[in-house]
Length: 239
Ligand code: DC
Image 1 (tube, rainbow, N blue to C red):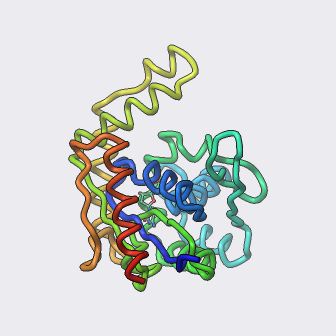
Image 2 (cartoon, rainbow, N blue to C red):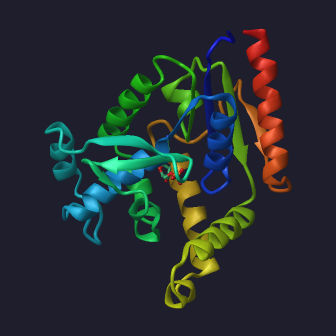
Image 3 (cartoon, rainbow, N blue to C red):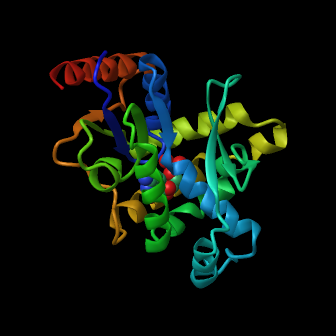
């Protein structure tokens, strides 16, 4: 049997990391973990519990909630969708965590040291048995610096904003929801998140020295999936 490895996929927001990571996990029978969903779930918890007023996140109160074990995040495979759904304290929050209200607030939460410690420990526990594809910002640098395969994915901000716009348009269930979408607002969100994610003090988004770089601005989904699978085969044959 082939040796199981850890595959770390990091990169900028909205560059299709999770789509390609999910697809690869399916093809090779690995577990897929979306770590961004975990940061989003913590953000949603703060929003739902009055810990994230307009002035900004209430750090002390959020830290208390973390210390008291009030934030439990888990994943359950959704066979119909062919991907794991994210649960916050036993409730499926997959839809809520993808909304703009969460996207606009998640980066400051992801910069909090106690949030990173909590989620990094959980992610390391999930990878103990290997056979995992994990996507995020710091997987190859902080969570699994020893990962056998590391990929750093990127694309220009405008390409990523357009992709997110198309995705939200497709998901919108009413004309009013569609009308509320603004490409400029999405581009601003993408650029702001890039800045915060790359400049935070702890585990900032950066390319691991031993990562394979994939700029997918000009690639189709099929092309990048084929590229990823070929790299996996090459690496696993050497392990
Ligand atoms: O991948 P995403 O857009 O769902 O990520 C949401 C936010 O969480 C984003 O601002 C970056 C942050 N994040 C992080 O800091 N570390 C990770 N491993 C994953 C995501």
